[in-house]
Length: 127
Image (cartoon, rainbow, N blue to C red; front, side, top):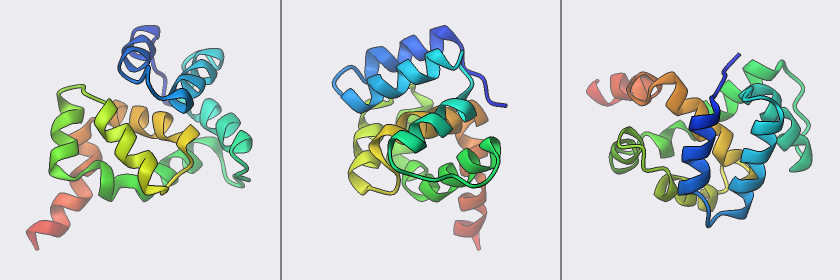
């Protein structure tokens, strides 16, 4: 289970205030007491998705699907600096995942640690 704190939710809420889907997602995350997997399932259903695997596996799979965008050098640097807005906007524009799910995906990647989350792509680029 990936758990985020009220302080982390507040940080994202401040930075993503201009993104209504992000604000809606943060409210659901808050309603789920910071449990990202539970919140992602609720948001996925609202977005018309039909997740068929366990909560943790589903969010992990979705985050991995978005990894190539999240781990671009310019975005990775922003996430390490805890500047989430530019990455959220770009990820939503790519349509890799529904806009309602961009926030939990980013929070999941940040919780994992951006460098750890992006490590599989680093190994590929070295070869």
